[in-house]
Image (cartoon, rainbow, N blue to C red):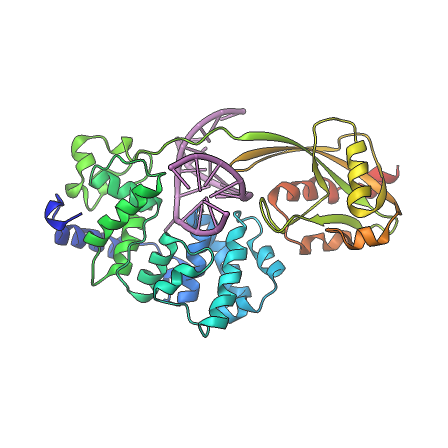
Length: 369
DNA sequence: CATACGTGGAC
DNA sequence: TGTCCAAGTAT
């Protein structure tokens, strides 16, 4: 897009936007300094996640891993535990891997060249955000806020769920970004989207760039941006079991290293709808070499909604009567831990519900009486 | 290009 | 209760 074809006065638009940002920006933890590492962590946490949710996680994460090297040297399980409850856990694993890469290959300095795009978990938005915010480089950082704001100002009706549309907005930002204050410009666009130019009921009367907005002029700001709806989520019937051995230890299992909730821990968890618990018994013997005795009664029902599916979990309790095959157990993803130590492992929220519902209840009494 | 990938809050 | 959303990325 060429500047001559833009219908707005770029210099005045920049000035109006930057002035508003200077006077109205929120005081956020990651805005108090310009450490590329801290900016990076904040951007990963903020992906698809609200600012209010991120703040306490960011503070704790920075206490645990104050520097890039500290994070690089940490155990992955510790990192996942710090991420517990934030969701999209591949963000944590990719960040950890990328930070290790930066320590090893870039002398612990976050790259400020095209190399940054090679880092795991750093896509087009995050790369632009780090380059502009941490290094003052005029690179576009186009997220959902930016697309919403610009689709309204420039009356663009492209479907923002498409990659091609994001690229179109990046080209547009290349034209209108402030060369002097790229960090403030990008953040101002996002801040405007978060505080004024909101998805529903935007506060146009308070908008610093209202005079530049074509959608407002047409009165169709609430119809933008155009975004195709997602398909309905699917339900899965699951069974989980809280098993205790004679010493009072609890059995937990680690999920596979790819896919949903990768590498997180949970109570033994299988797919299945029937009230017949023989499938759990068979699973425990086949996977862990354990002979178990399940109480044939659903102790708790957990409904957990993910972004793309729903788990409806019937939760059972039971005892481990015998270790049939020690080697199978050792080679499995399962292990016995003290009841009090379950908290040390990163659990997804779905199974935290089981922890709260059963493990912290009078489980010994339920099982043995 | 479409889909998988979490969670909690707003309306 | 249902729907949509929030500073996206990997495959």
